Structures are given as C-alpha cells and as structure tokens.
Image (cartoon, rainbow, N blue to C red; front, top):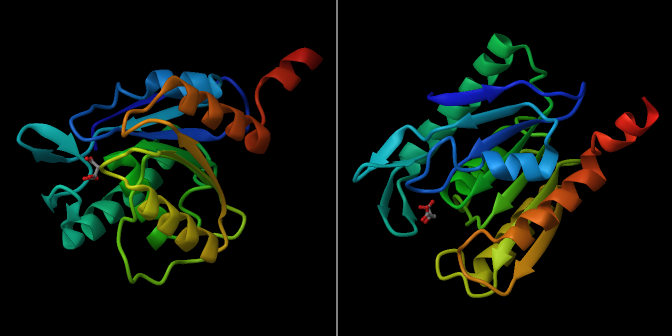
Length: 211
Ligand code: MLT
C-alpha cells in the first residue's frame, strides 16, 4: 500500500498508524501524529480504493452504506500490510496504535472488529459502526478513544453510542469525547486525544527529564 514511514525517536513508544478520511492522503494526519506523540514512529497509509478520484480505504454503495465484501477484503489487506511493514521497518507488530479520521476511523474499527491483537489501541475520530452482526474478538485491555460531534450528520450520536457499546461489550476500555461540532476534526478534539494517549502510553517527557 502507498505509505509514509517515519522512524520514532523514543524506544518503546507506540507506532502510530495514520488512516485518512475520504479524499485524503497519507500526508493529512501527520500534524495530528505530531500533536499526539511527536516521538513515535509513524506509518501513514493511503487507501487503495478510489471514489471519483478520491482515495478511500474501502468501497461504499452510497453515503453511509458500505460494501461489506470490499470492507472485509480491504481490512485483511491492511492487516497483512501491517505485518509486512513491521518486518520491513523493524518495528514491534504488537505496538501499533491507530489514529483514523472518518473513513480511516471506520477501517480502524473494522480491524478491531475482526482481528485480535492487531491494534494495541485506537484513536477514532468520527467513526461509524463498520459492520453489524459480527462476533468480535476479545478487545480486553485495548484502550479506544472516540471523538464525536454532537451535530455530526455522518456519524450520528446514536451510532457513536452503539459503537461504544459494541467495543465495550468486547472488553475494550472506551473513552468518548464529545465536541459541540459536526464531522470536522477540531484542534480541541486532537488535544483531548493527545491527553488520552499520554495517560495510557506515556510521553517522551519523563524520559527526557531523567537524561
Ligand atoms: C465512510 O464512508 O467511511 C463514512 O461515510 C465517512 C466518510 O464520509 O468517509
């Protein structure tokens, strides 16, 4: 898959897997990664599907109606790509935290819904329920941050709550942050995600203070 890999500056810091929204590229979320964990390695991937020239991670039949066969295929493709990238770049496969926005959050959710241990944690900005009726693997010990907009017309509040329930039901530790906003990714939401990440995965600062 087309991607950017940037090595990290802190031993053991989670590798950030960046997954853009519809019409985005692998460059879109680099500044978000810097805000969340500037010393982490970054693997930023471009979706392999094109919708009227706009990159996406899987096909959809209409707005909010996913092509479930393609979703399964593309989720496996991304899961396999993570294995390959870990071998190629020499990072620990079990130390990957996803940051996805919109369509990218939806494929990150689909990874969590299908593959045990594929992500150590996830920051999902404006996700939907990727698929209903799946038996999820255990997500015990997997922290998930969901950023949602009270007035998001694409990822509606009821669907955010449904997703929270499904992930918690599989054992994930879910934190939902609400913004008085729509589908847009705001600076305050990114700052909340950064604080959530620092609490769970640490920052480079303690280490730097000691050295
Ligand atoms: C999707 O298709 O994944 C969602 O509708 C979000 C988006 O517009 O990309």
